Length: 477
Image (cartoon, helix red, strand yellow):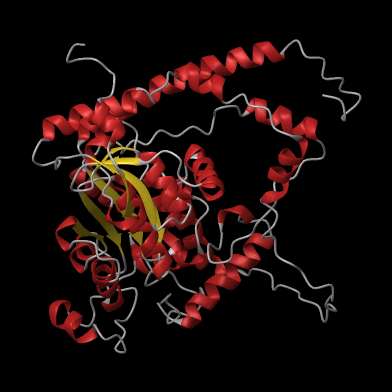
């Protein structure tokens, strides 16, 4: 047997089994560089977690003496999802740092047999399912649907919107300019329009020189009212303005199964996303203080496949725990947090509180956390010529320290930044923390994946092309 044989050594297989607390197990960062990291939302991981819940962990995980995973990253992730506190492991007789070459050799050999070609992945997905199981999966997503009370309400009174007079034209024209300048980012929120108007304030009423648009309740109410009237009158399209704080859920229902199958065939493989950050040495996440800038930030985060947490102020514990879990399962060396908040005392507090919570509440080593305040800072506000959009809150416990550093009039909201400027700032920050060569490699691999999927889609559609759909009978496939 040569030294390059792919057979596992007897010691690797027959090492004694022992129980190890799951929190003491350490994913290997090298695994994420060589192979796709195990992610908690992978379909295979979810299926494995359900199997572990039913039958337990059948195949133990293999660890080094210092508890780094040699074989079993996916089983480890599934066991965490299944809620196991301890798992069966086989412990090797060396520490990773003491014999890194040996560790890398065993890591490659342990993974070699589980790597499959794309064709093998396609074929092994074809598995029979009983009708009862299929129906159970079909209705599972509905189980959390909200219950609605039967009682109705009587509609009382009548609402008649006032016509838009010429006196409102200066404000209406200014609104139109803001919307046109942000067409690439539609839909946008009323708050985004409000803060954009503050940079070049129009008159709220043409014949009243003192009615300059300001950052006050009266101006905001005037904006809300005029936007409502303009949309009802058809001057502004309804879909241009949205309210991200009041989401609407619509169920993706179909009239029959034939319609569903046709749509699925048409959309086949189009939902594939490659993890473009899987080769990065660091785990990167984006934290945004408020939902109202998500429409600006989300496209850029999607381009790089960076997770986003929108805190709507201070993040609660579940989103912070989610960040911790993603970092731990990534096996990466460092957690980089790119943080976007208002330039005010509360924004400063948020930028400090999140990494502090990860350290103090979730026991993440401070040396592995790198928080970066991407925006907004008073210096950036001055650089981009922003007018003060908010008053620093005197009730904030961080008020005095903030005023001492920046002054009482240096308070600005994220929405005041032009969307293109905010994206430029964020893109620069992302590029500064990326291994660009590794990122471009993953982009190239995604292009090759897309080509492969297109070919597979063509093959499937060609095979189904001979099927008689019997369009006159929707119950026959």
